[in-house]
Amino acid sequence: MSLHKPFRFVATAATTIAHGEAGANSTGPNNTTLFARELTLLRREQLGFSADEADASLASVLAVMPITKSAAEFMRTLAGGELVATLFAAQFPMVYSGEGEGLFSGLERYQYLTTRLVDAATSCSTLPTAWGYVSRKLSLTAPGMAAQKPLMALFALPKPIQSAALTAILKAPELIVMGARLLSDSAKATSAQYADAAKVEQERAVTYSATAAQLAELAGDEGRTLAARIPALSGNSLRHNLLRAPGATRLLTELGLSPDREIVPIAVERFLYAGGNTTKGARAPGAADFYEAIVRRDYPLIDALGGSMDQFVMTRSATSIASWIVCRENNWITERKTNGAVRSDASIFDLVSEITRTRSGIGGKDKESGQMIFSYEVLAAQTSALIEISWQPYTLPLTVGATLSAVRDWAAQGGFIGARSAQGHSQLIADFGDEDRFPLADQYEDYLRANADKLRTGLSSATFGTEAILCGA
Image (cartoon, rainbow, N blue to C red; front, side, top):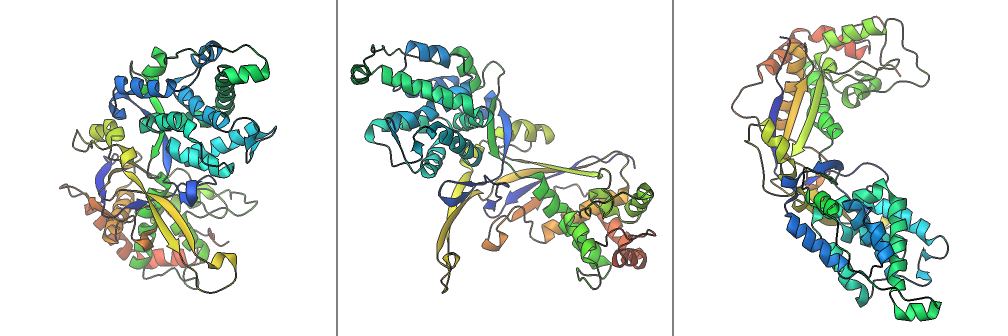
């Protein structure tokens, strides 16, 4: 069989899903681990609000912002997301004016503001949480009553627009902070008290309305898209949880082995469960292609997922995996992939919530032994994801079977994706539909049992059926 159609199924969360963002900026306000996010272009039908609603919400922000003619000319040059980001960033110099406060003071205050805004845009999903993050990092006190109106207007913007503003900060932080300083100075120039103190002419505030292009971008009109970071399940987590880990367990179980260093070398275990890694200064042997061909022929799971031997990295794996959380923002792809069968009216921004836990320590004088409160974002229970597994042309049936066997085992073993399963999160129930796609999985498991002696020797010797030790480091 040269071609295999993709295997698609829906998995629904039986519990809330915890799936933390990887990287140094994964922690947001109040020690909160953020859900993994990916940059997405949102279309008109995905946003969940009309152009009129976008215009009205933005107008409410602009109505409470004193803007001069020169500032208005600058604002017209900005994209929609940049405009909202600049209005947001301008609140810091406007609220903490004069000598500033905390780290937002002195000659370097705008440098500090720039770095903290970037960190907030990386680890936050809304403007209120970003404000809290920056305030905490800059040691700022709570804003006074005078700042309430513009802040509340910004915080009331539709969530996709807030996310677009944070994305704009990530792309051009220096531009946003420069614009924030301009708007702050503009606000000062409209004050009679400031003009008298500075002995300058008071400027007249003008009414600024967002341009047609800015509104079209924010509302997704005229075929435009709005860039935003939305929660997503990472392909790396899916590949490990659905394919590699259960596939490795099935392989060892059928061969009567276990991940015991005296029976299966630790390097082989690392290869099977984590993909392996090359040794420092490694050089691929001249027969690397020949060795790889033997390994792929004898071990269909390795053919499916690939990996790295001690001396060389294997070529492209035969299997690909992708997923889409079922929500309004992803309807355009889930409907197309399933002929309209999989869709949702719920916004992804409404599916994310925060859970707070307390870690307790008993005894001890170390600072880490006491109580600690921490939080993390989760996706709501009963959230669904469309998962798709596909194969390269001319993939062997046993390789496909190895993949399907792993998916079947994953579902039978609890269907966990993400993190914090020990705390009761991240369990999914798979719906494989009516079509039986698992005969190839049965064939693969029969193959393992029929060739157990040969395959067992290949793993325990770390040669994988070749004449060389491939995973001995």
